[in-house]
Image (cartoon, rainbow, N blue to C red; front, side, top):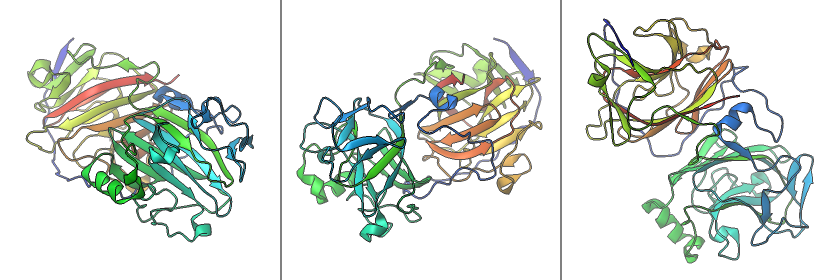
Length: 445
């Protein structure tokens, strides 16, 4: 590996922002981004979703990935396939269904619609040790709020963590007959409920707050409720007409298909450094206990020796967990041209409080939301970082002419009409100690 040197001035500002633990809101995809979210056929996956590890649980025809609760096969009555949907029929008597597979850390999405006054639910981490799925698995409520006279923030309204956590203000529940978008995320016991692009519940399974709420609810009588680290996902038969479609999941603990490990946890094989002055790579970058540590000075970066064009990039970062000092860094994508500070590329910002911002370096071809853009910087839509010193997760989807940034599972920025060209991936040294781990990439075919 070669270490190139250049003289430059270091421009870095530090902003200390404390992360909020309460569930508030997410923002939907950028409305001015015509190419950022590519259309996908119903009950199908895009190449980017496939690369990221998504798996269909229903393809519009087959129910092979589901079976009856405590049964060996899919119910012979009560559940049908209709108009590209898996439908539970009113009074059909089919009973609850569960996934054939079990999941621990996952991201699960589907679309649902209900008949008037219909009621149902999605349970997760379900075990077949009780009479019904809801006795072991927490429930994402599905409901015709208007038909039941439920207020949007009721503990039994659509999207609520049934009887335990109420939806945050600002919830959008579409009228009966229209499809709603649901997303459930569990990662290291951090749980989120989303409804129509808005995060409405966030809590931690097994926390003191969780345990107190369970004990005070009807679920306190069930010893196995909410304690399973792994389990099935269940769809409830509550005796009403409910339609489900576009059901998919990804295992957040599993490698992505075709995953390439960019950092081996031992050394900097596959990376080249470019730093200010006479600094060597080892002066700034080191590996300890499987963690890549950047001391932040002098300015510069390490970059991959290989070019990548279209991919899903996932990594984790944190600032020093002892000092809890805020700092600055960034991930550069499609870096082309000469090594310099800073090279022509698109930057996904890691500056404390601003993770998810875009920076356009050296007039790289791209478009972003003009309402959030000032000069070369496009602000994130909202704050999604964890407290300084804790690990954060970046997922960067570089797909053709679009780039999507997700911080801790939340879409915070999108770009489109991005120049599609092979380039390096860089990690910046920019004034403060920062740690990286689990850096991996899945090519998008």
